Each structure stands twice: as C-alpha cells, then as structure tokens.
Amino acid sequence: MSFVKSVERASGRILRPHLTSPSRVLVATFGSQLSSQPYSYLGREQRPSVCGYQFYKSFTLWPKELRDDLRAGIKARNQGNISLSERYLTRAYQTALSMPPSTLSPTPYLKLSGIAAVLAEVSPERKAREVLEDVWNKGGASADDWASYTPTDEERIRRVAIACKIAELSSHERNEDEKWLVWAVEEVLKLAGAGTQNRSVDTGGGSTDVQQSQPAQVILAELKLPPWMSKDDLGVPLAALGNVYARKGQIEYAMPLYLQAISLLLPPGRQNVSIQDRCEAAQLMNNLSELIMRRPPTPEIRHQAEAWARKALDVIEGAGKVPLPKSGWFGYSEDTSARNTCDQVLGVVLFNIGILREMDSDKKVARALFEKSAQQCARVGMNEGVLQAKEALRRVGRTQDEKTS
Image: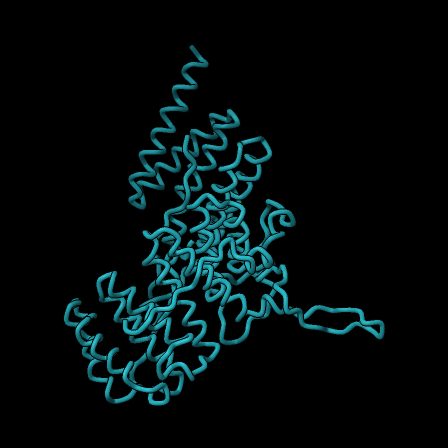
C-alpha cells in the first residue's frame, strides 16, 4: 500500500546564499510547533512548487530607451514567437543594466527585475537561471552602480520572489533549491517582523513593550503584515521549502512549515476565504497527512493522519459550496478553473483516507473511497491515480474473498 502526496510543479560575479539548513532562524521561529500544535484543524503546495509571484505589470512608465524593445518582446511572446521575444528582451535587459538606478527610478529594482523575469520566461533554463541570479545579485552586495542602492521593502519582496523562481529552476541540483528557499524564508520573516515581535515586559513600574532582537516562536497568521506585503508573499516560500524538506524526508522541518502555510491560507474565524486559498490549504493538509504516515503507523499516528486527510476533504467540500468568481466581459461567466486544485486533490485525499480505513480493516468504507477516488481521478485525467485506486480495489476484493472462502 502506498500513501499519495498531492500533485506538485548575467554578468559579473554571482552571489549565492550559503546552505544553513536546518536554518537556525527557522528552528528558532518554528521549533516548538510540533509539540505545541494539536493534530486537529488549526484554523488556517503548493502554490504548488512554483512560487507564484507576479513579477511585472506595465512597461509604459519606463525610460524611452527600453520601451520599443520591451513592447516588441512582449508582443512576440504573446504571439508565440519565443526566439524573437528572447532577442528583444535580452537587448532591453542589457540596456537596463547599463543604466544607473537613478535613470530607472522610481523603484528601479522592480523595473530591472521585471525585465529579467519576462526574459527568463522565454529563455532556455540555463540562461533563465543566469539572468535571475544576476538580477538577484543586483539587489544585494553588488559591485557596480547598484552597490550604493538600497532596495525598498517592496523591492526586497521581489528579490524573495526571484529566489523562489531560482529554486524552482535548481530543483534537479543537490541542495541548491534548499539554499535559495532557506534564504527566501528567512528574508520574508525579517520583512514580516517575525523575528522582532513587540513583547510586553514587566519592568517593575508597569508593563512596557520592548522589541526582541532574537527570533521569536510565532504563529505567522497572527502577525499584522505591513501594507506592502501579502499573505502570498509570506506563505508561498514557506510551502515551497516545506516541499523540499518533505522530499528529503526531513519531516521535522517540513511539518511546521506546512502548518504555518495552512494558517495563512485559512486564518481562524475568517469566513471570506477564496476558493483558491481553500483548495491550496486542502492540498497542504493532505501533504501533512502523508508526512505523518511516514512515521511508524501506530494507531495514534493513523488517527492523526486521517484527521488531517478528513479535514482536507471537509475543506474541499466547503469550497464546492462557495460561488465561483466571475470572469469575462462584465463578469457574465463563472471561472470554473478556480476549483482545479480541489478537483485534483480530491481524488488523492479519497484514496489516502481509503488506505487508512483499509489499515484499520474497515474494508467496506475503504472500497467505497477507492471507487470514488478512481471516478474522480478519471474525471480530471489523473491516470496514475486511476491505476492506484483500481489496484487498491483489487487488493481489498481479494482480502474480502479470502475471508468469505
């Protein structure tokens, strides 16, 4: 029996983050989560493995030296002419690199990294990574005109997004994706203020708020984020790093990251949660259930794993009752793609609960769940899921036949 995890996916000297994992900052921030959090729904995967940031919006306010190449590059990309798009965008990027930050102001790093991001979209993987590492370097201790430029907070968030994309492109290299994501999570925690929480301290003359300089163990959903930071900025790197640790079998580091990401997607007591956030939370809950089952399958472990899988099922069913967002001209049509993640995760969750019921010798319920899983996987084109569910049905059927013979 196999338990299933949800479906996932330059010039100058390049500076790269050093591997510090398990990161002391992360351990200090999340270290007590597993012992202090119950294995029940905490209130609030993957955006899957891709860090889903929007890198660029509009090029209309950029220097005139860049506009023609940018416009031509974007037009060629939209028309499917990738090689022509790459040529125009490469020239635009090189032109932008030749300019001092003041020429690209305001927010020069957002502009430079915007060009780099679109160029990376249309470039071969090796060149894409070189371009993104180069522009990531420009936002740090660069040795050129950018050395004297201090990025704004919004631009630092952009740099986190770039690190996430580099991690995605580095996933086939040993430890490279982990290096980039550890840096991204530590940076976004600093920006969110997770390591400098105001705490009430009794000084003898009354309670006084003081700022801790050491990382504090916190629930990120309880943080009041600055206006320039979204929960996606914070949650996407957490889930991505959790996926890396899960893949490496480092369960003790993956689980608290998943817990924090879930708490951001589904804040306790909040009702107006989008379908997309609900579905992504369900996917992480299923991943968490799968992680729990990597431990020796004692009755307690199986109970914990099933509690998370059933909570994922509850969230998916709840998302099905939420009205679909509107799309198209004047919002006349419904955006059915909003439930795509739920549709895919549902087949996996049903299968996993079936496995747990089978382990508890509840063959009747297990069979019903495997049948539903096979139907759901077939509906969304998950052929591997259909095969696993059918194999489980044969296995359960054989066991039942042996008992009645």
